[in-house]
Length: 190
Image 1 (cartoon, rainbow, N blue to C red):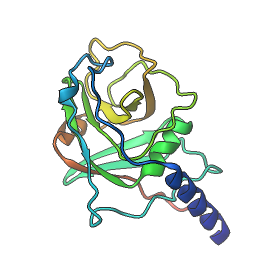
Image 2: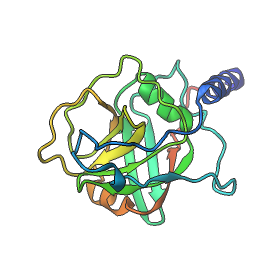
Image 3: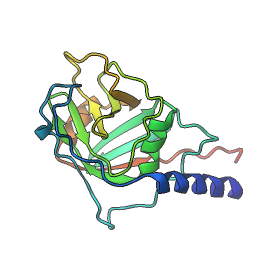
Image 4: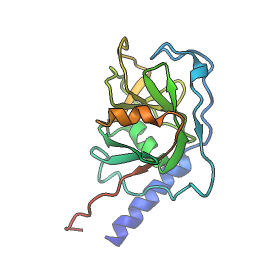
């Protein structure tokens, strides 16, 4: 058990070390929604008081599908279940925990820009559905869809997971949101 935890921590540290800081702000309209880039004013917190150690909850031998990630801002909680095991999802999980400010984007999305680097290797496109947690490749942002009216498939979107907490997504606007892997129940065989 101890060796496994050390291996998981080492793997998570290696992934985190590869991630580079600083996703730039977009300079054009978001084709996924048609909203102007000025609507995206998300920022990441670099306050050491709010920073927590990097997550070592997810290892490559365990896989990531089914991992729960919690987005928390005061009484607002959005629980996400990871649905894809791919480099994009793994790069997202390697950034955790983190605190980001979410903003509304085009009346359809709540978005933020993480400080880590995404890996979009072999990323599939996405037909947006309400509750999807996604990344928009050209800008490297992270977002939730809460309204998909008029949206169509886009190769520039990649799905990470989904939530049923739609009413809570809309409350993320302007909030400092802490994102972390939720505590897992310990397997009695370990």
